[in-house]
Image (tube, rainbow, N blue to C red; front, side, top):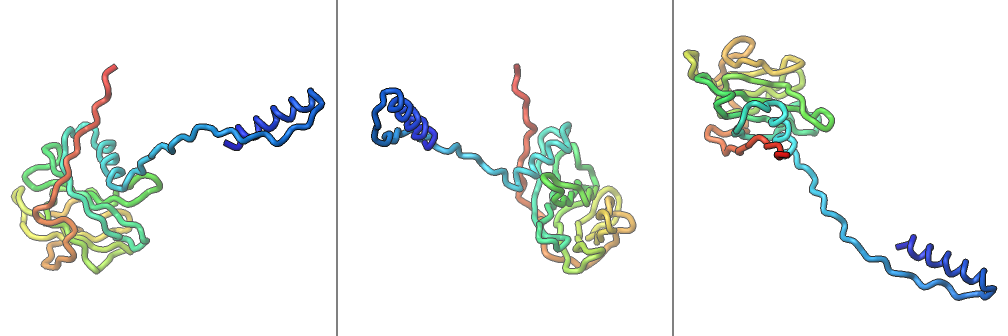
Length: 192
């Protein structure tokens, strides 16, 4: 709007100079107002969906349960994702991911195979990260809760073998035994 008013004032001033007459200030010209386009800000749930689709493009349709917890005490929540789909799961269970913010994306600090729900977060911590438990059963192994401790880089990938250990201790349930799943369909590229 300011540009329109300045352009109109310049035009009137030039016209006055060429005619030798002084003129009054140029009237302000109203420019049509446009509505600011509403831009939706992606949520962290959108970021997780995007991460899963990029990480597992061949998985097809999948379901997942999602929880948030600040596992490393830095003030930013980590995502705990329990995946459920034929692509991922077997008789021993399904994978549980622990994702930490890494700039605009996520980085895996846990890719825990053959796990089951519930998933809990304990008050105890190892190497600055809270300890977690996942349920394990099936696949011919022991049943119970496996305690997983952060080793400085990641949580153990297999809860049925050392360094994971069986425990009676459980913490805050972050993904319930019967969680509410979110359906995720792969994005279909438009034909053309």
